[in-house]
Image 1 (tube, rainbow, N blue to C red):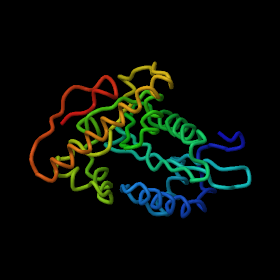
Image 2: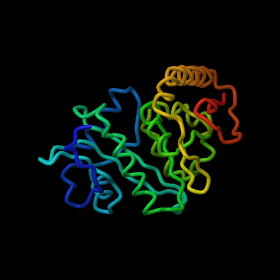
Image 3: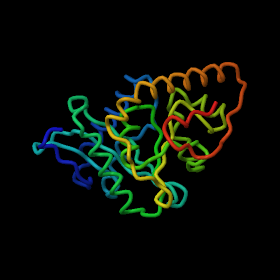
Image 4: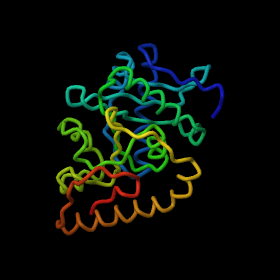
Length: 234
C-alpha cells in the first residue's frame, strides 16, 4: 500500500467527498453486474458527521476509499457497509486497512454488537476472515426489514425473496464478540484454497439460479459453519 495514504475516522469536514463516493459506488456495482443498497450523498455525509464512517485520502486531499457503519436491531447488529476504493488505488492493500479501521471503530462504539456483512467478493471474504468473521446462514443475521429492504436495488433481490431471505448469491459473514474464533489461517493457506472456494461459489450461484427459475426447492438453516467450505446449504 502507498505509505502516504491516510486512513482515519471521517468527520463533518469530509462531506465534500460524498458525491464522489456515491458515484463510485454506483459505477462499481454496474461494472460488477450486481446491485447494492443505494445511498444518497446526503446519507453518506450524515454518516461522516456522526463519526460513523472511515475515509482514506492522500495528503493533497485526493479521495482513496470509504466505508461506513449501520446499526440494526436496537444495536444488536452492526454492518460495516459501502466499502469502496477508488479504481486507481485498488489492489494496494488500502481496502484491508479501511476494513480494519471501521471494524475497530465498530467495536469501540458498539462493543456488544454482532458485526456482519454480505459479499460476493473473495478479497473481502479474506479480509473478514482475518478479522475473525465466520461464514453463517442468513438466519443468524438481523431480521430488521429495513436492512433487507436495502437489497431491493440488487439484481438478485427476487432470488433473495423467493428463498424467504434464507440464502442468496452473497455470502453472509459474522463476528460475534461473545463467540468468535482467533484467525489462524495464513495468507498462503487462503491463497491455496481460494480457487476451490471460487468453484464452490460458482456451484452455489448456479444451483440458486436453477432453483429460482424453477420456483422449487427449499433451504434450511442449520448449525453455524466452522469454515468457509462448510457454508453451502442447498
